[in-house]
Length: 549
View 1 (tube, rainbow, N blue to C red):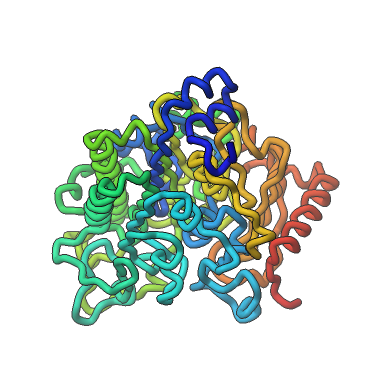
View 2: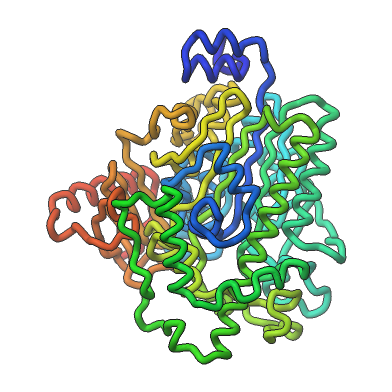
């Protein structure tokens, strides 16, 4: 029987457990459903199951019943992660060598820097659709703005999406919209009008449930992709959630972060020997909590309250999706994957998205329509615990994300998984789960799917990257991980923008030093030189474009 036609359960068991279970499973030839849920800018420690103090019962239960990853890597920012997720390969090959919004003159016109998911990259939605799946999507696309670049052109049969990387969570103002509100929503490629009571997370959930209900008529398995925009800036939440966390964060940044670290240790998410980043500010020039006035403390605490409300509402809506699957009898035959698209977001969006005529950032209006605020770098330090640095960098705080996987019933495994995985591993995982052969890239003229299926890992047989390296680059920030050693290259002005300044190279043992606190570069110069040479080979292979010197 060919790989592309073998019933899923027989295929999976034959590859992982052996022939005895394969024979027992072969009577059920149904391909499993696949539900992929992506949060936007969710920090590593925000969920209860990762040590957080926000009410997230749905995701915590999913973590308890499934596999909870402690070493899942995304890319440093949202569109970069999405390109790797959709294609199963490196972002420089898939068309997002950098974010479209950050494309520099020396990068324009270069292969892999198109600013959208290019046609040389596979789309897992196209492959699953060709393999007999109904393909459904809601939420943030961020992989191309043009009519021929949307999800409806890359394999999704039903889609309701925001094309851009961010937007207000409530319906944009019709008169004098701010830059943040000048965005495009599409359903199956066509412009749509949002309802008056639009709130992103609630609406996307309603829409995906309606797609799932319609899908039941054709009897096909589904691949459903819920790309939520919460808790991405701006901080906005439904009114019924806004007061739920009043007073919860009045003790300030460091107290909240230290409490999260202690819970992480008790839960086993943070290994005892894995030194976290210090609770002091990453940037010592920033004011500590005790240096703020009472009025400033009130505003700062309110920001985190609203952020928590958004995460709480997100968890509630994920619960609605899972409840629908249970009620429709599809839950037990569904692979469920949840992860964040990058680390906690510390950037000041106001420098890119100025307020408008109807922006109202008064204290009384914070979190409601018209407000346009971030939670700031110091709360991002809390969300990023136990790591240092944030979204936009290749430090652990930029690319290590919470991730949970629950296999279909009968294949399930529970517990913490400390092996290394990455977002481009999901596409080949989905294909193997569905019994669809990885395509022949040479014959198709496409870039290969280079991610590794996580199926063996999900049944306890170790990381597919155990004897291999992982590498990445964005904005001139770089990393190369070999076993427990991580070579980290961070530009002096780490974060968004061009990559004209060379990175400063550091070396860490991330098994013992998740906070990247102890630089081993001085004591191991030969290792640094070897890993740097290997990273340069990676950069040449995938086509990283460097600034002219």
